Length: 38
Image (cartoon, rainbow, N blue to C red; front, side, top):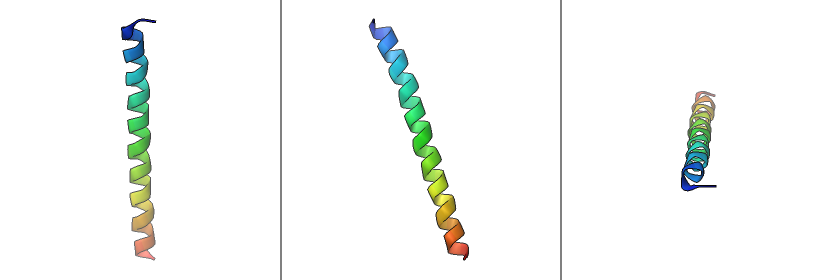
């Protein structure tokens, strides 16, 4: 396994982790806004 493969696999997992983080953050915002409406 060379550095390029490591970098590529890290980039993919990093991007996926970032995507999950923002999705969770946005979902949390929606939940808070919904509770505020009640």
